[in-house]
Image 1 (tube, one colour):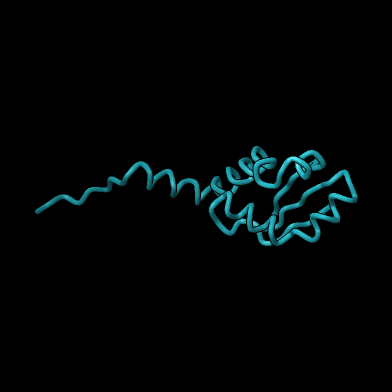
Image 2: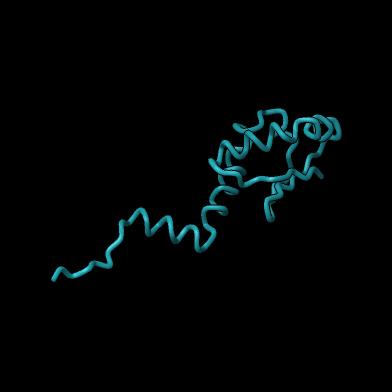
Length: 97
């Protein structure tokens, strides 16, 4: 009789740990904050003062009413860019402050 092994691949174990601890989401938010300028461009990045994430909503604080207004028109495009950047449908809505 062959003995059944309880061994799993290291990559699978890490992926499972990330999912269980929601580390993949936390890492994605860190990456979004870290590469915000690459995602949205220099102008928006310069005027962004804070980025937070809760339950599919990305909260972005902007220090310019003009930039905030422009972002309001481009919400769907920004959502698509951010989701493409992280490789999943993490962001469902953007809330501008």
